[in-house]
Image 1: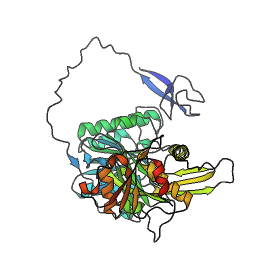
Image 2 (image 1 turned 45 degrees about the horizontal axis):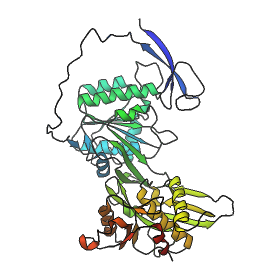
Image 3 (image 1 turned 90 degrees about the vertical axis):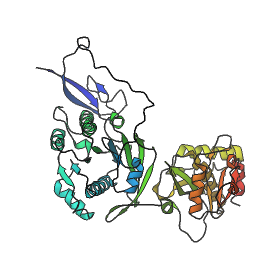
Image 4 (image 1 turned 135 degrees about the vertical axis):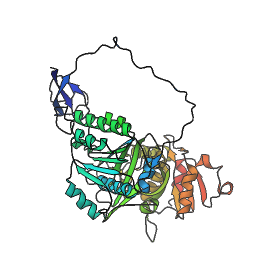
Amino acid sequence: MAKTRSHYVCQSCGASHLKWGGKCDACGEWNSLAEEITEAAPPKSMGGKKGRVLAFEPLSVEHAPPARMATGIGELDRVLGGGLVGGSSVLVGGDPGIGKSTLLLQAAAKVAASGLPAAYISGEESADQIRLRASRLGLSQAPLGIAAAASVRDILASLEDSPPALVIVDSVQTMYVDALDSAPGTVAQVRAASHELIRFAKKRGSAVILVGHVTKDGQIAGPRVMEHMVDCVLYFEGERSQMFRILRAVKNRYGATDEIGVFEMTGSGLAEVANPSSLFLPERDRPVSGSAIFAGLEGTRPVLVEIQALVTPSPMATPRRAVIGWDAGRLAMLLAVLEARAGFRLSDQEIYVNVAGGLRLSEPAADLAVIAALLSAAKDCPLPAGAVFFGEVSLSGEVRPTGSHDARLREAEKLGFTRAYTPTRHKARQPEKTDLSLGITPVAHVEEMLTLAV
C-alpha cells in the first residue's frame, strides 16, 4: 500500500511547506497555508529502461497555419487572433459579475447554431439557472449541450466518446479531481483539474475555455503555472458602474498579445462595439480646459481616448495626486520633468488625472497627451480644437518617437480630427508624402507645449 505524505501548500503562490506556519516564506501571505495529503509514489530508476528516441524535424519545413473556428462574436475572434484553434486551451479571468459567463454562453450558443457541437459545463450554476440566463439572452433555441458538474472524471467520461468542437468549463476553481484529498479551489486541485482538461483538449482536438476567478489584486486565483499551461490568457476588464467591457489578451500562442475587444453591456447580453474610439471620445458643444485626446494603440487596434486633468490649489502641505486608468508613478515623473526641464511648477497644486470611459492605459506614448491636459487645466484654457496628441517624454524633456505612427494618424483622421502633435522625429512624414490630410505639428521638447494653452 502506498504511503501518504502530508504537506502544506500556500493558496496564494503554490509554495509547499513541510510544516504549518502563519506566514508563507515564499510570498509573505498570512494564513494562506492549507494541508494537502498525497500518496507518495515509489521511486523509479531511469537506468533500467531506455526512453523513446525523438525524431527531430528541420525548422524550415512548410506547414499550413492552424484552422480557426469562428465564435460568431467578432470582437472575441479578434482577441483570439482570428478564432479558436482546435486542441487549444483558453483561460478567461475577470472580476465577479463582469460578464464572463454571459459572453462565453453567447459564444457557445453561436458555435452550436453554426452546426458545430458545443458543450457548456458549469460548476457554479444548475442546469435550470443556465437555461434561465439563456432565456434572458434570447438563446433558448440554440442546440447547445449544458451540464452542471464538478467532477473532472465525470466530465471527461461524458466527453470522451463524442468530443465537442468547443467545451466551456465555468469555472476551473469549482472543479475537483477525486484522486486528490483536498477541497476544490486549492492549488493542487486547480493545477490537477487544469492539467486533465488541457490534456483532453490536446488529445481529442477540442477547444477548451476555462473560466478563472480572480483575487483581490486582479490576478487569476490559483497557481501561476496554470497560466503557463494554457495557450491563451484573456482578462475581462471594466467597472460595474460602466456599461463598457474590455476583453484583453495578455498571452496568445496563436495571435497578438495586448489585443483588445470592446463590448457594451445591454439588457440582452454583451454587444460588440465596432468603433471603440467613438465611446471614449467626449460629446460636447464647446471645448473645456483639462481635456486632451490621446491617439493610442491597443494591440493592433488604434483607439482614441480622452485624458482629463484637474489642477487646483491645495490647502495641505502635501498636495494630493490621484490617477484613474494610468500609472501614478509616471504622472509623478512627468510633473518632475515639467518643473525641472520646462520651469512649469505644479508642486503646490492638487492634481487629478482620469482616463475617460474606464479604459486603462499602459502606453508610454500617452505622456504627451497627459502633459497637454495638465497644462490646459493649470492655465484654465482649452487646447486647440480637433487636435490629438501622442509621444513618449524622456527625463531630459525630449519627446521620443512611438510605434504605429501612421495607424494612429489614420484613426484620428477617420474620426474628423484636423491636427496631430507628434514626436519631432516623424517630421519627415508630412501629409504631402502620404494620403493623410490632417496637419502634423512635430514636438521636440516639452517646453514647446507651454504655448499650446494660452
